[in-house]
Figure 1 (cartoon, rainbow, N blue to C red):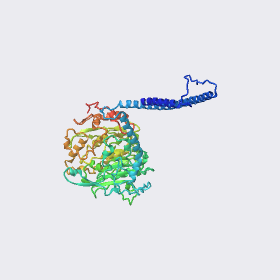
Figure 2 (cartoon, rainbow, N blue to C red; figure 1 turned 60 degrees about the vertical axis):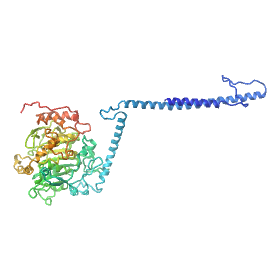
Figure 3 (cartoon, rainbow, N blue to C red; figure 1 turned 180 degrees about the vertical axis):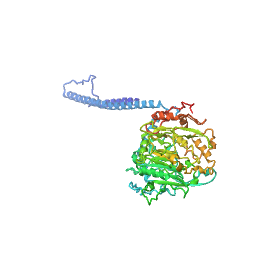
Figure 4 (tube, one colour; figure 1 turned 135 degrees about the vertical axis):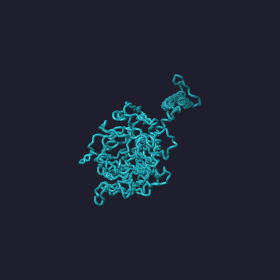
Length: 637
């Protein structure tokens, strides 16, 4: 402003000086013409012609001088006005800049929270928003380019024939990832296309006994789960980048279409761990024969059998040459069976770990026992249920109801209107130490209508989730001879990554228990603990690791349990295990639980906690939940 004032003053001084020089004409004889202060020209007296002529010339000169002065004043006013306008604009801009600096720099961080505030914070946030905007609009193109580099451009899906599966991707590496670290999913897919790309792992049962026995197994689709969840709550965009669609995007030719994929085209991976179970093939048959859209279902089985004694899970009761219309024959290319010798079996955790290695980026993931019967249209039903939660991190899980009188033989639909809910658990002891074990669960009419109901626990016998649950919470490789305890391990690990567990509103499948009319047949099925003596003592070591990872055995020094690949098979960073223990009423020091939890789960948990579901659907925000369950009837038996 001072500079502008000086400039205006300087301009006026220069213009005035120039005007004086310009307006001082010389007379004919070299003297200046006279000028009277009142502006009247001095007329010379005299009567001769020379005098009159001189007077006329003098008047003419004064008229020119007056016109010149008027023009100069007009030009001067114009220049001064322009300069003044520019100075005014400059002053306003300076004042605005001063106010902005005053506001933002007055809020600069004192360093206590490490967050950049003020102008630096504004610049940082602006850069972050621009980066997110660019990433959002480039992601689709990036995925298409990277996927196109590994997928044969001539591959296609024959929707009319499941026998004509294109295996052009036989040389693909399943661990290939996008720029964001998310593995690339494609469809159709099979581990048969990965011959020569399996990896060697130690047989953990023998390894814990000091013996070097190796197994060759498929690679995990996501070899580094932490690269996906990044030890924090995943963003919705990141979660939606996992999951394939049977029909690729018409623009990018990518099967990874997120929630733009129609519900009926979203792929489903079904994991089954079977130990010498004659009903395994019947379960696979039921899955494929009752699905509304079997073309989007892929079944992965870990079949632990005695070769020549037990039937294989992918071999139908009647040869396909005699009856090619059997589901196992019709959809044989959508069934992946990893067969291993029964003598290598060391429990469901190890078998299900290998089962998770069969996952290849499907949109949904389901886990089931090997002796389960499904209802007609189960896939559409369970998909509609999980989507009704509005929770991208929802996992539907339960202990299944017995098959007897559960399915109408004519319609194939469920005859039941009740469903089980997971809310009953208690500590139990034994040779492997004290650990939580789920007890029998109550079954009744749903308390919540129109969607699954929130519950605290996860069950291994049946689970349905988004595919990223399998990718981020894989079964632990280092837990041989563990049967009880695996459900708390998976449940707690998933909780810390941000997952929420729900009881399905409707049962879509039923379990064949060894009771009633099924008792004789089911009791003939062998169990893995027939190898207990072979792998004696390994379960104790495995249980210490299982409990140590989820912070349930603080009394055991950390040096006493195996920490191999703990980050890979460990906790996430979205929530703390202690938050779960506090809310549900579990005392890991004294090994006790607050009983009668089902009373809270039945009537209040869903209504209270679902209020804290994040607006973007990325799980319940437990930081907003200040609740601790306390047994209202501690003296009841």
